[in-house]
Length: 428
Image (cartoon, rainbow, N blue to C red; front, side, top):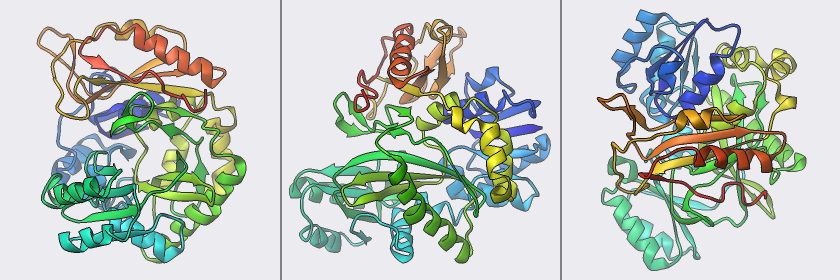
């Protein structure tokens, strides 16, 4: 098989790395890719939200499967355009991807299908939004309705902070993405990430992961796209996972199919484990980043057959066989520490030289995934984004996996970057 992966981050590097190990795969193409995926197969520099350019590349390469990594091309309708050209695509339709591209749409669907989530209101009028805040209790959760690169959620501790955030959002902080907002009640509990691979009917549940969203140790500072993750996360026990399946995933998949927008691909279910049971924090229409890195590193088997069946149908009849091929029952505990450029999640300095990635990669059980890297004129690896590297490790237990990931971090010489030093603190 030839497989094309759209995207350029750590998630896409992890997918390319895992897919390239499959005996079914001859070539892995990436667009636009990064210096990490460039070592796996050819990269093609293009804007993956430019549907014409994406279709032209697909027609040129003629891949057997196309995997759409990030949310932007899904929201732009890339999967629909490629399917219309006859390609098999792992990734939901534009309509189904609105679960991520519109927080209000997702909340309305949850309400319609009876899926447990926080009380909310959605607004495109500033006065109405400020009035709604008066009916809520602190802390306040304010979300941009559209895509804001993982930064469109603020938890405000006081009414004044909440009012200021609402005003900032609705007067253009994230442009069109925050012209409409969702205000939610704050849910007490612990967050976890449940990933479900689906063809719209059947479902494969991957090991539960836990992400670390805040930029600083001890979960301090602003929200980010994710500073690290580990799996499996013991916060979700078998009973809780059963409730996620019966109260959240099954109603969503069956409801969306009945409403003419069957969901194909991976459904990311961000849940809050509360005293009243699991409730949905958010849905994403793709693998999480950095959770994808720990999932790909920890799976010992071949994920390609499952990706293909999710894209083409027939998952329910092949479920047991696909789970066995992936090695789900033998998943190895895994952890990733994100190294970010100084200043992240605000303004970051680009161009700083990174040394020692090869030394980190040489440590047993450690793999360094590239997220925001580039190569300068001197062929040196440099920082080219906010989140730059995902130092990932697997081991016989989580404690050892986390320690190995930090051993990898310490082998990297990059004064221009930083990381959290407490990834996995809850489980430890």
